[in-house]
Length: 58
Image (cartoon, rainbow, N blue to C red; front, top):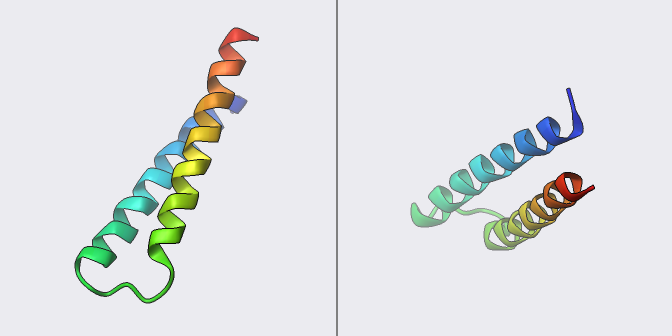
């Protein structure tokens, strides 16, 4: 598996994780720091996107 494929899979995983966290928040069943986790996941998504862009420029 190439690095770019791994990064794309990680983007999908983080997106799915955010969907679950958001669902928990909306249902009132949030037990931890879900909003903070979502923010951290979004920041990771942005970093991965920037890395993918740089790989193409490379």
